[in-house]
Image 1 (cartoon, rainbow, N blue to C red):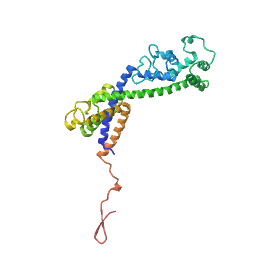
Image 2 (cartoon, rainbow, N blue to C red):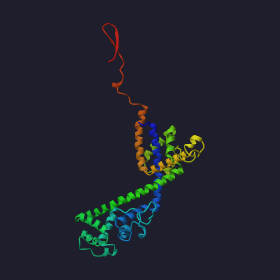
Image 3 (cartoon, helix red, strand yellow):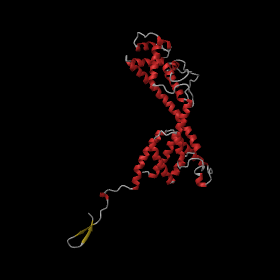
Image 4 (cartoon, rainbow, N blue to C red):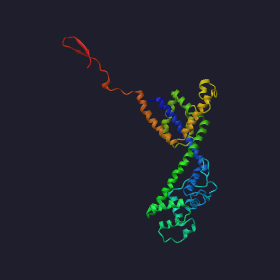
Length: 345
């Protein structure tokens, strides 16, 4: 079983990963608020869902619908973008999120009344709502969307609310795929952000772990800070996380140069190429850990702190053995002849 020293080293490293994740996630949110990459992924997903790759057909009608157009300012401009967006694609004028119910109502209104806003002032149709929708859907020159909407209406069996739920489920399934695209894009951004931060601040996981293992005082102080971090939660702000990272008595920064060169030669920055290789590996581990996110490392930190709380007392006072297994003291048996005999029971 691991000793408490190894567990405490793990706690210190996890605390660094937690703070780095908060810093990188905050930087990513700042980039997202500027570029609005999620809006680009949402638009691309809706074009794919509505089988409108150019954004000049149903996708344009949807974005120009009053229910959707009210979510962003300006007019919808499809541009000439047909390829899947990347991590830095910007669509700052479009909404980053469209509620499921809003999408379903907009699609149902387009199916029942068409894209012409003047139709809203026309007399109500004598057909039932679902029948009117079905009649207009048959006029859509888009086989894929036509089939999906007809399946949603036919599956409702005359229930308008159920038809809306079916359209919402159709939209949600597409949003799951879009969220997967965006999540992978975000992880790449956070990884490279973490790599830059790790190099600039010299947050070398291997160097930090080695220092924690060799320095008892630093390890105890970092564990104490980790116990306080579990009470704060994972929603720490960027400035607080950066200040906390810099306040730790760990070998973070470029003051002492490369490691392990300093330990071997005492000359900062001197040493063999292996020093650079270990530093690059340490930075890579730090950046990779940052992609897991602050909530993940917060949960891991809590679990490891619980493990430490059970291991530490056992090391200070090992559990006592069972009384049945303890060797029994010899007993003196006196025989009738007056001579004493020694034996055990």
